[in-house]
Image (cartoon, rainbow, N blue to C red; front, top):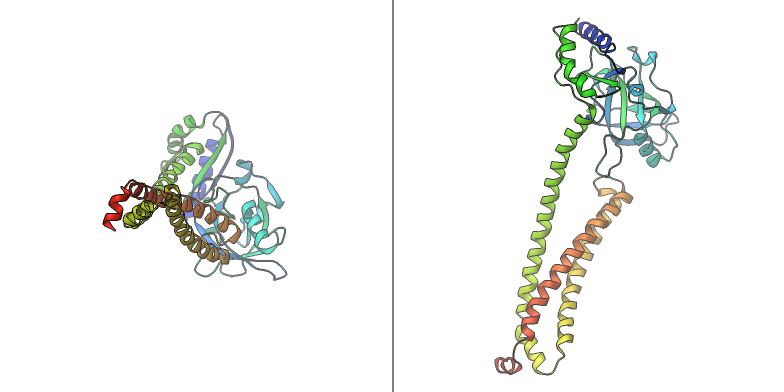
Length: 350
């Protein structure tokens, strides 16, 4: 009864909102595009049984007309229709990012016609839960929204299920309209109260504002993470600087003695710097080779060796440049001071 009243309340609100000037389309889902949808894991098996695709993706339960409202056409297969909102429907749509990941892993052109299964500890969204475990048939591929980038800036894989207004939780109404949406968003609470006093609008804002608020939080997190990484790199470089500086300073008497015996100062300085550079380069090369080897065997963050190797190669290149610069600076100062020692004093001390 509660779900029925909830659906009736939304239908009444939808009819009232449709009368507002500038409204083009109305739909709903368990979140707005660009929301931080829940991440799940599943397994996709082609109809012939080989090969399987296992991967992580985000799921979204959407209402009728959701993709039309956001101008996201179906690029392969078919979209949701009246059959998919029946209680026995076992269908799903995926986005282009999901299809690309599927093709990359399996070598097959499209996931349309395959079956998606959730493991026991990863239940599907509420709308997609059924007593049987036959999985969900992927019936189509929808164009990416390009509002949920991953760490590499690419759209994340999505799986879409059908939702009803009575059971979608949370229930997020999306209204596509012409003109400035801010004025309509400010009136929506009053409109809902006029339709039914039991309707509560917890938040109403333009989609661009919602995306900006999400990105502000992500930017702060990324900034904090970058600051921590730079601090770690700085402290590592400082430790290397101190270690090499002390090591070269202990060679002051040797450097002065070699100079007193007629060694060319430039050759002495070049030898010290080259030894420091060789020591640092060999250490970074050995450690970097181990890291890249482990990433090449699929132990990277994304599990895709080609992408992870390229990413870590860039990180290692930056680390190599910083550490090499620190080692050269640490060697140059003490060596220059040692070269200024009076040869007579160096021979007397020796």
